[in-house]
Length: 149
Image 1 (cartoon, rainbow, N blue to C red):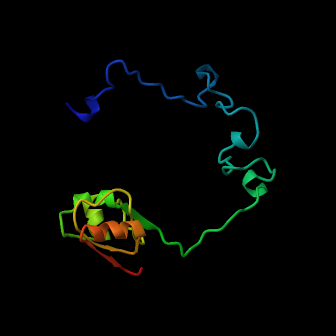
Image 2 (cartoon, helix red, strand yellow; image 1 turned 90 degrees about the horizontal axis):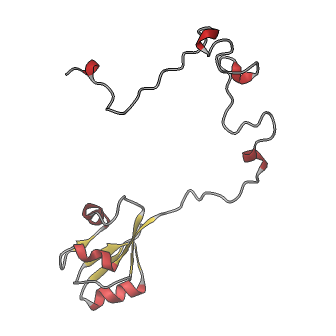
Image 3 (tube, rainbow, N blue to C red; image 1 turned 90 degrees about the vertical axis):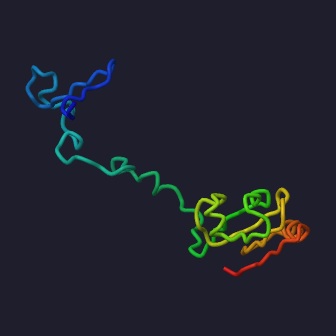
C-alpha cells in the first residue's frame, strides 16, 4: 500500500471542489459566487473583525472598566486532605507538589488551607497557612515553615 493508494473510509464521500470563474456552464461563472460590486467582491476586499461599515464599533462604544494589577501574585492553593499522597515525616514544598501532580503549574507561592484532616506528620514549607491548617498540622506532630515570597 502506498500513500497515493489510500482512499476515504467506506460510506464517506468526498466533496467536489467548487471551481470558480470557469464560465457560466459551470454554475459558478460570472461573478464567481461573490455577488455584484462592493468591497467583498473584489480581490483583497477584507475588513477587520468588529468593523461595522464605518459606524463606531461596539468595542469602542462601551466604556472601559477596571484595571489589571501588574504586581498581582497568584498562589497555588492546597488543602490538608490533598497532602495524604506524601509519606510520613516527609517535606512538602511547591516543587514536590508539582512532581506529585497535586498542583498543575508553578505559581508565585503556596497557600495551605485547613479542609480535611492530615493522615500523619509532615513538614510543610509554604508562603501562607491558615490558622485551622496550622493547628491540625501541629496536632499531628508536624511542622510548618512560613517562607516569604
